[in-house]
Image (cartoon, rainbow, N blue to C red; front, top):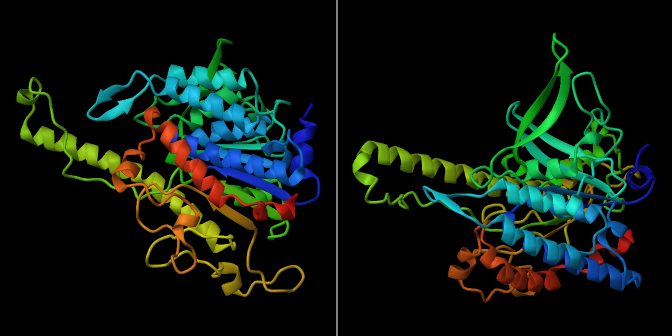
Length: 420
């Protein structure tokens, strides 16, 4: 028996609305402030005090901490409840820090227990999910990016001879897989298949998974657009600004930098046992790991670049000083492609990105927008840098404060009215 409520939201004709949520650890508190503001705006527009985000959106997608928040949205949870749960579990998950060469690692048991307290024993086919859900993770033993959803028309939804159907996967397991950030948490295991050997004994085959942010989809918006329109993903939604809306929410935008001169200071009792070459090798390894971690930010910005190139947001974020923000420069318009009605196609969807800058570089074109109209520009650079780590519960309150200000300025009923 399928989830008829989810199927109606995914497959019934009509306008479709997607919510995509980035990864970012404790900085997920930024996302929450935008979600709270969206819920408030939608309640004001509908006149319903009990209106929740799952009443509006047909699909919620997330990577890493975004997968946890997207699941709560898909379960119909009010944002105040989401906020309270997230604040409590963030402090629990990122406790008991263990330091090794300045690389923090945490006990994944706290993460697992925190997720379980929210989703209990529910699976991807659970009736507790009110709308479509997409969770992105990376399977390392096969090198594949897994885009897991509760779309019952996808090929791996049902059991096969060599796999356990996706519908059986526990929400706890897939969120744990999507949030298994290397260095911070150990990899996650999921049961992929069970088979009997020659003796008749059951052998369980597990897959190893790490954080979806290690894939190209820490910002899952472009992946969700592909899912919405391409036939293999079995949704086949209409692609046009009047038929498809996507709201994308970040966890803080900033340049990720690495200072190669920031070297490890070895304890005095260890240093005599390490050669200079070994110390250099260890520091080179540290630099390599930190450089690779920057790719998560790069991938998120790349997804934003692509989304802004096929849409006309109410306001666009700067990609860089060389190419600007692509405002009014859609690939579709430049290509000469035509819409179904024969008019020039200028956008595939209605798209808007909300985020909180965490550095002082320009994030909006100052010829079109005044930055202070979108976020608090008075915060000093040193404080913004201190707010960038994704594993500092001490930053939760300040991040929430700044994100609430940004959400008040950025979220507009104009972004939703045509889809209510």
